[in-house]
Structure formats: C-alpha cells, structure tokens
Image (cartoon, rainbow, N blue to C red):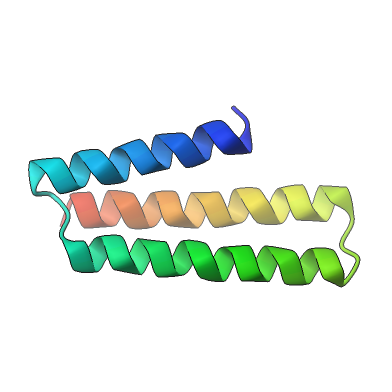
Length: 76
C-alpha cells in the first residue's frame, strides 16, 4: 500500500469515527495538528539531505503514529 492510499484510508477512518460519534472535533484537531507537524518534520529531513530510504522510513513511522492515534481515539 502506498503513502497516498494509507493517507486516504486514515482520512476515511477519521470521517467514520466522526460520523459514528467515536471521535470528537478536539480529537480530529489533534490528529490534524500531528499530521501538520509530521509534514514539517518530513520537509526538514528532506532539506537536511536525508536519503530516500530514510525518508521512506520516516514517512511510514509518521503514518504508523497517526494510525495509532486514530485507533486510540476511536476506542477510548
């Protein structure tokens, strides 16, 4: 599964959590803030000359972290 697919799947999980009442606006905001911070961290790593393998690993670590946040919020 590529990054775009994972991103889309996460967005669907967030939308489903909001629609079902499992997540609230504050939790969605926290996820949005984390995604923005992850984007800034990724751009910084790229600007510092990280290798493609390092960038791929970083991207997947960030996606895994957000996925965990979504799971936690939906199951609290």
